[in-house]
Image: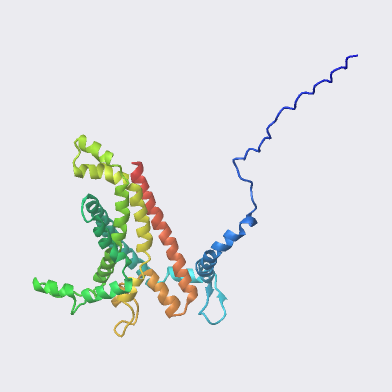
Length: 324
């Protein structure tokens, strides 16, 4: 009897194991899982919090206190600000600061723009011109101030010596109230023109050369191309330099402090008649020479609000010109 053949079982199909598709998004990790990275960068934030953030809020607290640095603090409310409004020396310092700011900022930005256009147009020694014009900004302010004091000295200054060669008598650069402001403004102009020139030069190099080439083909000359193409495209850069120059110009301290510090002839800061007394210099005098830290803090916060107002006004003026 023939045997029944056994049924063949079908071979099992080979099914490749599916490998998990890596998700596009990495799994979320908790904040604490990055503690090593946070620990690595924490020294900077600790130093910033202790030496920058804490003094800001502590000065706001001090503005409502009377404190000489040794005795107990006394809460006085708004008395510091009420006295500030009636303080003629404070308003004189604000006026001096605004005059010096205008006398220094306008020629600084205009000269920087002209120098940037000249450096951008030259073909040789461009790197040398950049370094040479930027060097004044990295030079010590104290050294430059002492140099300017010697150059503009009333009796033995180089400027008066040159004016004497052409028959002009000596000029009281360091004692006349208006010339004191002019000397401080010249010092600030000399230091910050190169810094702004580098910023303008970077903006000029970012403009595509095809734009100027198209304008040249259309018959536009260099002057028309500069005012019709270059200046409108540099408007964001100009706005940035105006805001930075406003903030830096209103914080002038080292220049008048070195030029017109206290001495045997002038017991008060700012030179004769306190014509060079800026607001930050007045804050230094009240807080660290008269030990009135509460009033010094009130001066700083009132001046901070003034800087904010001026920055907003400058911003609105430039933005309005952009819309037009």
